[in-house]
Amino acid sequence: MSYRLVIFSIIIFILAIFSVKVLSADTVVIHAISLEVKLIPQEKEGFMDLLSLIERRMSEIGTITELKIDKDIVNFVVSTNLTSERLKYILSKKGILSVKDQHGLKTVLNVECAYFNTKTELSPELKISLSRDSSETFAKITEENIKKKLASYLDNELLSEPVVMEKITGGELMITFGYGEPQFHPDDIAVILRNGPLPGEVSIIKCEK
Image 1: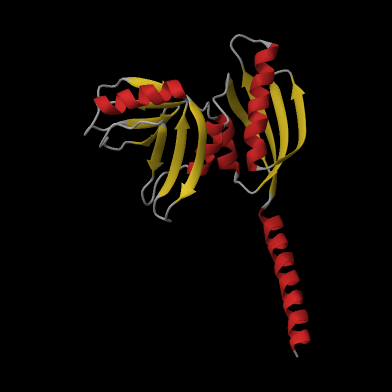
Image 2: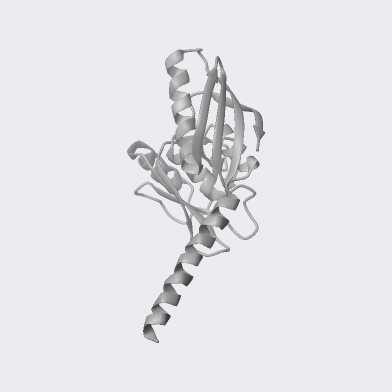
C-alpha cells in the first residue's frame, strides 16, 4: 500500500513540474525590438558602451536570441514574459537617480546596487545602495531637510516624495510605494538603476511580438 502511495506521489510531482513548465512557456513572448541609438559626440567606443549596457538590462528581463546592428539602429529579438510597454520603459530610460528639495535644488546620486522587495502586497519597496560620495551627499541633504519633503526622481519621473524624519547615513535609500501606485513597476526601476545610466539616448522605433 505504501509502495503504491510513493509511486502515485512521484507521478503527481512529475505532472506538477510539467504543468509549471507549460504555464511558464505560455507567459514567454518573443519580441522584435528596433532601437535608435544616439550619442554625443558620435564615438564608436561610446556606442559599444551603450550597446553593452542595453544588453545587460535586457539579459535581466529575458533571453536575447538575435542581435543585428545597422549604423545607429540596433535590432533585438528577445524572449521575455514582460509586456511591450514594460520593455520600452526599461530600454528607453536613461537611468539617472536624483533627489530634489522644496527649494527646487536637484542633486544626482550614483547608485551601486538596487533591488525590489515586496514587504506586503500593498507596499512594494525599492531598496537602493549609493556610492560612498553620494552617501555622504545624501546624508547632508537629509540632515538639511528634516521634517520637509524630499522628492526622488528617475530621470524626470517622480518616484516618491516622503517627509524626511531624520538624517540618513550609510547610503541606504528605501522608496516605499503605497496602494494603487506607482504606474510603473519598482522591479523595472531596480533593473535600470543597478546597471547604471545610459551614456547616450535610446528611442524605440518599433516593438513587435
